[in-house]
Length: 401
View 1 (cartoon, rainbow, N blue to C red):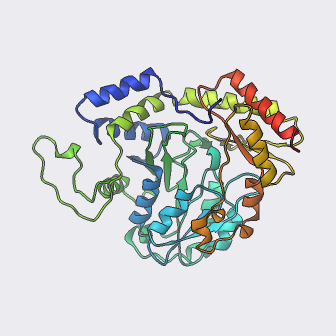
View 2: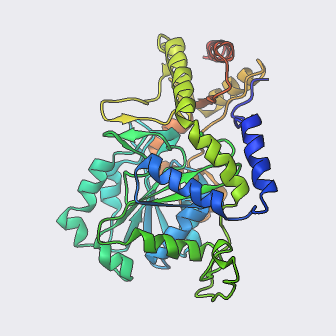
View 3: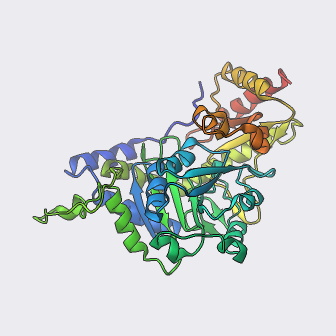
């Protein structure tokens, strides 16, 4: 069986993790701090904090910005549940909108219609690693008619004087727009380093700060660091050498990254460009192998202004429904090839249906979902494996449609 997305774990990773384990420092420490700095340097953002998940990062930023009950946060209906759940954890309401016809990203026109005086944050999602239309989004939130609706309640909100743009960039580390890397494209960007991501730390995530000059990103880093460690005024590294006394300034969380995770991340980041290069080669092989098939809809991944991180290859099959798509997937599995679907739109899922969201209100999300099949993309996938996958897909589709 060709697996769907195994992590790239080799002897170099094993050696670095072993060094961390034997160093005497396995929680948040020097390796985590180094990983944060290396990420900041690679991305070109102002400051980075690493955490135990992207989900934690999203929620910490919402809470730092003061999102609470009565507030609204706009998200695409086509995303993973974490994007919505963090809003609900804060007591606010996720306002789901549809996505573009041209790609899987959130529709700017739909966002415009959804903005109210309760809107505090927009969370666009870089589905599959392809950046959203951030130029258009910033044009929108900076329009006088939109800024006049903004009703700031907290100090960060008053300082920003507009809706915060926080990218759910879980898929898009290494992607670019206008020559700028993902992570430096929005006020705040949040990456995931989960096991199936391009860059993994087994579990983990990072918050990249790129707020306007009026904000002190070093101070915000300190605030987020404190919030991630129960509200303690000092982390374990700061309490060394007899500097033990600390205070607890708020009822915070426990979602810090460990040095064991950071050891993996440091190796992954060091060789990340080679990872991207191989992923791009796999994308190109899929495109060349499928582009002449009348039934194949190739996902957008490269334009004059944007380049994906080559995280997911979201193939779509013309003129099929959900039932036929599932039959095709089963036939692919029967040929010893693992594929997946990204994602089930949120209104299909029980917790959101109970809140009143209905998939009929998001027709583009549904039309994309019902014929989407995600093909494997990872560094260790061989060219022969890619050929096997292409043939399995062709056989499954053409014996079904």
